Length: 450
Ligand SMILES: Nc1ncnc2c1ncn2[C@@H]1O[C@H](COP(=O)(O)OP(=O)(O)O)[C@@H](O)[C@H]1O
Ligand SMILES: [Mg+2]
Image (tube, rainbow, N blue to C red; front, side, top):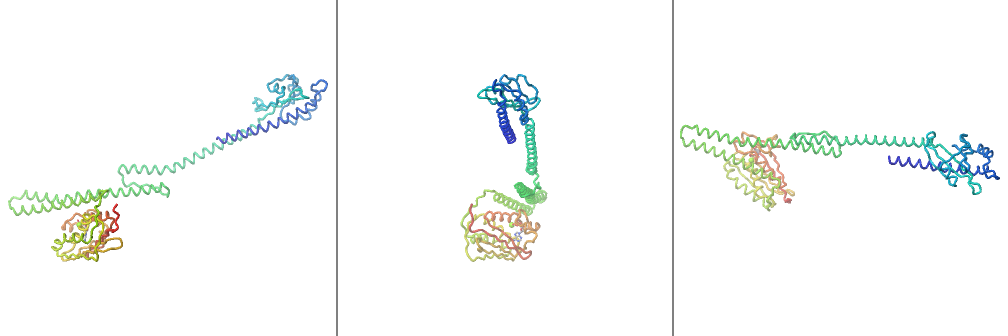
């Protein structure tokens, strides 16, 4: 719009300047010619001579021409209208004083009009004025139509830009709106929300990140629910047994002390089981603490394993299971001794628990690249293929009936896994049903101790 106004004004000014120059020149020429029709004796215009000459050249000028003598009498009019009438106006009196005057008027009859007043000078004397009045209306019309065209183009551009902006704004804000609504639903607890926005732009990436977060959240929520259900169930089982045993005791009519003793022993072992579960839960919660500080100490893995095995040997001997430690060299690494002890204890204790009497357990300690590798191989029941992916999950047990008999919570391996992960190590399992299992623990030797 600003450019339009500027362009319009420039065109108008140039046009007017040019017209002014043109008409001034014409008026000057006229004034010079008119001078020739001066009667030398009276120093007045010679009317006859003037008419003759003006009829010759007057038609060359586009507008109306008046010749006015120094007494303001119109002595010639190309429109033959006001001949011999007195004309006075500011322009003419200024021209009579020797000035060249150009002025612009908007007249009702002719529209935009330019007045040119030029003095007629004869030997330093001002005899009269050549007055020209030229209508500029046609030219103004052209300029105005250009102005209107420019204005129309501007308006069209404005509409176009507004339209395009709206479309683009909508294109950008629509997916954001969808995402925002999905997030609000997530905040209200609907965890499995998904948004359908593709594309490789930032919004597409954001949507994918949101979908990923959503899936993860609902997964975590499911884990939490399962966990609560499992914990309740695990705690309820020993409590139910205790309740049953206690009720039987109350109902006992006889005061057979040996039955009392036997039932109390059962209750005692159920309490132990409850304790075991709660201890596992507590150590798991401990490991879940985000800012858990591992108490790193330079440790010989070999000695740590010997310590575990020494503690477990009485149990193994009861089942007539042989434990062999096979090692080529002493390996020293930075670990949290207590935690790694617990992890290895869980694994080796499992090996004893899930192996029939007379079996054999081999523990291999070796270096492999930047890792210390501990392999625990047993000749036990083995783990079915379909159970392998879940073996490190909380509360997961392959065969609940048999595991119940052997005791345990299904938390041991998940705790071991957590501890080893905290040490930036890995744990894997290979197993074949009825042949045995091998648990492979890798602990980095160049550990980054945060
Ligand atoms: N060495 C093993 N041989 C066979 N099965 C095993 C072995 N170690 C673990 N498992 C199976 O993995 C399950 C999970 O082990 P774990 O987390 O230690 O729980 P728990 O020993 O309390 O049952 C066990 O119930 C058992 O079925
Ligand atoms: Mg176990």
